[in-house]
Image 1 (cartoon, rainbow, N blue to C red):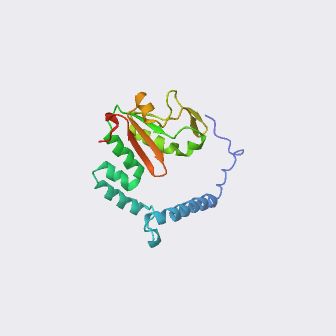
Image 2 (cartoon, one colour):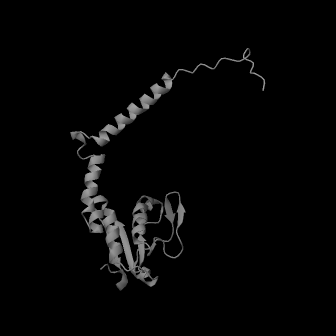
Image 3 (cartoon, rainbow, N blue to C red):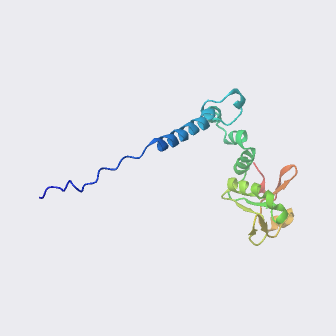
Length: 178
């Protein structure tokens, strides 16, 4: 093997200064500490804020509550209502939610989605007859608020949402919450 030609060899490249990388790393670290500090060590003004120590205390308190409906009522009252209604109705009950179709009723659909989740696997309808058609934030369909008509169509419970909250109208024995 021939010896290497040392006359044309280029000197090794000089390392670039590392201070910009170190500066940016320190800046990111200081920013992270500044953002995390109030979460880990809250001040007196954050007594009711959702900080890590407060969330830990809340989780410990909620773990002591064995009744799921009561536990839900401490967090989201609508969850407690949905879970209680789920427990009170048989799994094969058919539920009709009135006042949910039409463009003006679009903002109320959150209640329908929320309770439909808790009432699963029950059928929860908002339109009589045909399936409702979704249109950019609202449903088009056949509204119905007549208990007699809903009963003849096989529904067991009518849920009305109004200014005073939810109103339940049992249509059959199966629709009476126990």
